[in-house]
Amino acid sequence: MADRLTQLQDTINQQAEYFCNSIGILQQNSTPSKFAGFDRSGSQTPQQQDDYAQLFATLITRCAKDIDALIESLPSDESSNDLQLQCLRRLEQDNQEAAERLEEVVRKGEALLEQVQGSLADIAQSQLDMQHLSPKPIKPLNGS
Image (cartoon, rainbow, N blue to C red):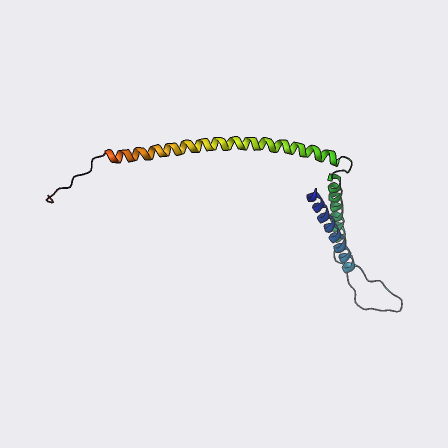
C-alpha cells in the first residue's frame, strides 16, 4: 500500500507542478490591460498561447485521471482487515510450501555432494594405488 500512496503523492505533486507552470505561461503570454491615464508604448504579441493552453489542459486532465485511478486502487477500510488476514494466511502457506521444497532440494544437493566426494576419494585412492604398483625406472650405473 505504501507504494500506491507514494505514487499518489508523486502524481499529486506532478499535478501541482502542471498548475504552477500553466499559471506561469498564462502570466508570460497574457496581453497587458489598458488603464485610463496611463500610456505605455510598445506592444507584445502573445506567442502560441492556444498551444500552451491545449498542452496544459491535456496534461492536467491526464494527471487527474491518474489520480482517480490511484485512489480507486487503494484498499477500502471495511474489508482491509479481512483481506489482509486472508492474504497473510495465503502467504504463510506459500512460504511453508516453498520452505519444504527448498529443504528437499538441499537434501538432494547434500546427497549428490556426498556421492561426488566419495567418487573423488575413490579416484584419488586409485591413483595412489597405481603409483605404488607401477615399476620405477632403473638408472644405468655407468652412464651408457
